[in-house]
Image (cartoon, helix red, strand yellow):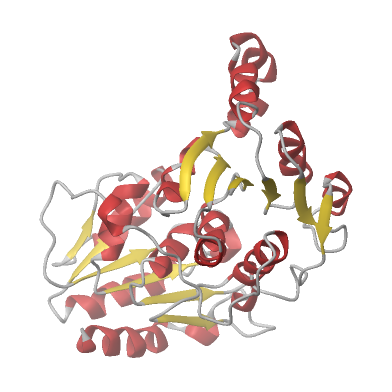
Length: 328
């Protein structure tokens, strides 16, 4: 069976879809999936053994200069690639108007959420087959994706824990040596309200420093780089790494002793790699979008404090982090 999957972004959303592919692969042995995805995240689908082809769609770039994209021939090229084969099923896991439009450009019968279940109500009008699944406000994103796939491909939804089934052999070696034990702090996120206070991060850096264990600090832009440099200043063991690709970051996270993360796509990646991860949540609900899987822990700032994080101060995080480090 040849299936086209529409899930273009973001990083966390893509990772949340992987367990659904594992379920489907186990239920349908001859399953082959082509995945339409933004180029920035194209490495992630390729890690799953059920995915055979990646179809990049630079939609974000197209929207910045639509006329250039049209006249350059990029959009026509994508359209021709999308329609090269007829699929047994086309599944839109994103549930947005834009993803529904992409699904309808391809050849095959479209499947997706019904109007009530879709993230954008209007998307439900554009599928040939539509299904009721738990709403965004009622169920975790992983559960929604697994449910949609089970209904679309007509198999019983497994009651097993989510299995992201990442092929670790596809992760590259790093060009620098990793210490035997190290911790990664994922301090960067897109929403300002999701940030954990910098003074708390600094206290955690100092506490790990007392154990003589390296703390690696990642960054994706200049603001994050500057914050990482401030956190590493005067620390004996904290190190700011150069900018890494997603695949390099995956290798770093996979081999880490522990990871502490705010609500960010890289936190979900760490969880999918089964690395012990502590997720810190303020304005978002971890029951709906939190890290899931083996060795995963989350702490949530309780209303009405959220997103001030006062209820998950650094001492609470350190108590759990120290325990994880001691056990590995």
